[in-house]
Length: 233
Image 1 (cartoon, rainbow, N blue to C red):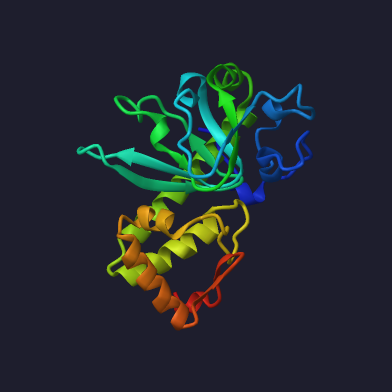
Image 2: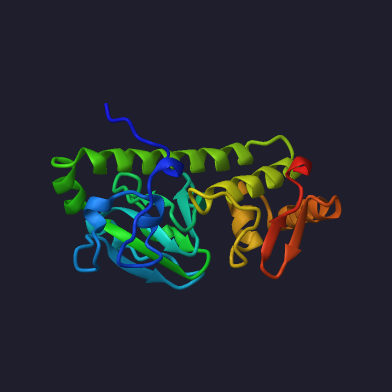
């Protein structure tokens, strides 16, 4: 079994793109390379509030968010979309054909203007047989993605709406920009997006957010929602 370092313990490196998520995280050096010509990833852009293209599913196995926030959704038995994940800069997200059997990757959407780096499936298949380092890096990225989704699920399961909202804000600040944690959410992430992640009405989310603001736990500013006092959340 491969042992993987937590992302926070990986050594960063310089890549062709200054905002390369792999370089910032210190992972996948062998398939990113030092120049754009050497990089195996393909860059894609999605405008804010738009659904992601369904053709992502055709040739790619996973992606890394370079800029913006991606909201990943599932369809329930009635066909309604349920938000289950928010991936920000540096976050890995799987592109799983089984997950989308009978539906489409296009139920995921960009909460803000989005730039992602997509890894072709053939690259993963070729390199895993040759490099244990890439395998370890992928395990670390998958572990971080799973932890992120579990944190959001725990927030959804909190006992009251206020606790759900408070737990969500902390989870997003801790997981949206790995390996760093922050105390401020990106301004483009709307309250309706966060309400979807909790599975509650937009009005209920706003009411709980107002209570937290009145208590001095958070502040709503033009640059985004900021956590003022984590002890109050």
